[in-house]
Length: 329
Length: 161
Image 1 (tube, rainbow over the protein chains, first blue to last red):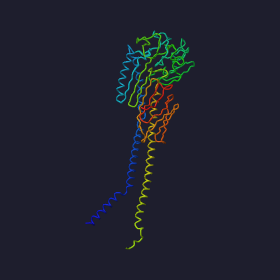
Image 2 (cartoon, each protein chain N blue to C red; image 1 turned 90 degrees about the vertical axis):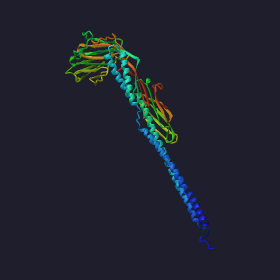
Image 3 (cartoon, helix red, strand yellow; image 1 turned 45 degrees about the horizontal axis):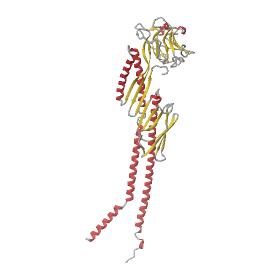
Image 4 (cartoon, one colour; image 1 turned 180 degrees about the vertical axis):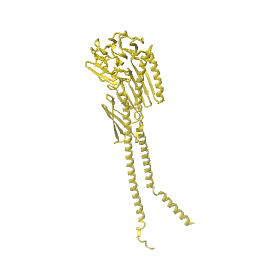
């Protein structure tokens, strides 16, 4: 019995001694394990940050610009349409259309998770006149005065600014020599800059159009017609049939934004076609009778538009002056 | 009694062996410790560098966004641009500072960790006539906005949200 108990005691002691062994390795192992867990956590945060780098960096900046440009273009179209079609109050009609447009784009943007607002600021309206000559059932009319006979006449007296000025002419009706050609003159000699600028349209050969700009020196260039046989000259845009003509800078040296000038036609019988333009001032005011040539209605020369675009990351608000087709635009 | 061969030297090797084992294993393990510690340290520094670079590039991109919006407008005085950016408060476990310095159209964003010796510089460029205000902010959520009244022609400002 005694032996057995002794041997038992000895075994207990051995077991106790075994349990105390390898403590250094154990502690080291544990500490290293903790260290490695720390490294894993660290690398995890790196992965998170790198993930930030892969997200789109622009945060809606491009969409905001696109929204603004789109709204300005669309409102320019709406404004032109109202000038063309309104028979009564252009301002009220334009406001109503612009509000409807604002609601529509707000709806569309809401689907993309953005708030888009377009608001026309009525207090900033600069009034003007829309002057246009249309095509009739029997075709183009010549560029003479409303009486139908006066060939040299004033389209807009005492204007200071012009925008969206387009002329469409039939080359067959044009004079072949530059001397007797139909000429658009911006004349600042009475109360303005005392300069005169003009552009003459003539037809030398075939259906081509020669545009001669006189801004002190004379520069001319010849253009081939559009597919329908006519020529469109964008006087404020500086293009002929969509093609850039560098010398064609509308009323260069005459239109300064503050100096007055007369917009005149010379040899109006030497061209047949249509035209439309917006001026800020005009001596004779409006003449809204549609059959007249040209007809003149009250118009909006320019107006400020407030544009807001908001996403969770970006808030963008801008005020854009809407005056489509200005020379500098 | 019979004399033990070797006398009192007997069983010494067991003790010596035990001490030796202890010494050698302590040496080995402390070596492991040091190596492991410096490994973690290196990783930490690399992680901090990486994170600060990413954060810096993000700030530069957002300054660029505001800059583009400013450059594309016609009337800067009526413009509102607020870009809120959420960034981590800490990079690799320590706070950091963002330092924006610009001269003319070029500038740098320096991100400096609170652990000494870790700093990252990210360059950026803005459009002509768009100035960026020099600023130092703590890492975390930021607001980058256009202040039309500041300076001669407005400034892009980086500030804490």
